[in-house]
Image (tube, rainbow, N blue to C red; front, side):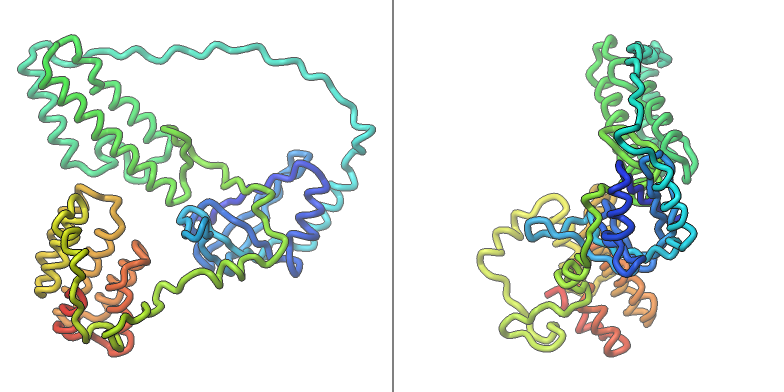
Length: 390
């Protein structure tokens, strides 16, 4: 993935001086909060915008990263990072000094009156046209076939765009699909079944659009504001988000180690798999009343406790179709895949699956314990794996 761009805007030359002399520690280290998850060792580019509207690109490498805590909870959308600005060379410093010397004095800067721009009328949106069959039976069959086709298609195929399509192409295709299948087009037919099909098509299109937007944002190729989607010029970092001290150390001290062994409860020892645990009476009604994604998760856990990892994996795969954003379900799917790999003697594949499970859901205690056991012992016996879910 290409290096992310962090846009730092300095409105005054005093802010430029503060950035270069106080915000930078040891001459090249910069600590800041960013609105995305950052990994150590990844490359970033600082776009330093000066008051004269000149932007200087400074390459850097993330040396440290830690999640930001808000009211005692980790915010997955914000990260403290420490960047080493390897591109902040003597040549760049000389350019900054030259720009600062050429800057006019505030008292002698002439104020040029700016005429207010004339208000522009926004063009009317394109009218919705009805290109659907006139016969109600044919229309019902057409919408049914379209809904069946889109449900079985990949997300990008719903809009008929390439897999690596950009934000502008995806948004235009989404608008076109909504216009073609909008419920208003069939409202005059006064047929509830046809209206319901049009509503289902609209819901499916909106869900596919949301998934593509989320994928583009996570890859750093798009930004969202409400329903809009556009290509970002770079992440805009507020000047107040840049730390003058080494605040990343405090964040790193608070950040939990995702491979850290959980604290043992009374009656447990070692790896935590040897002693069987008895659920409390208060937990029984909660398990019986589980609904939605929790019901799938409990069913898969029962199968894993019985040693049937392949059946659990099929249940979780079906659950992810209904709940694609559930981190516990996705993490448990990779845990089940790892257990299936262990039963076939593929320890390396199992290790990779467990690491992927923790990447999707860091709070997965089963994945952390099983991965720790495999790394210590070079494998895991089926009996130990089954006791993990009992």
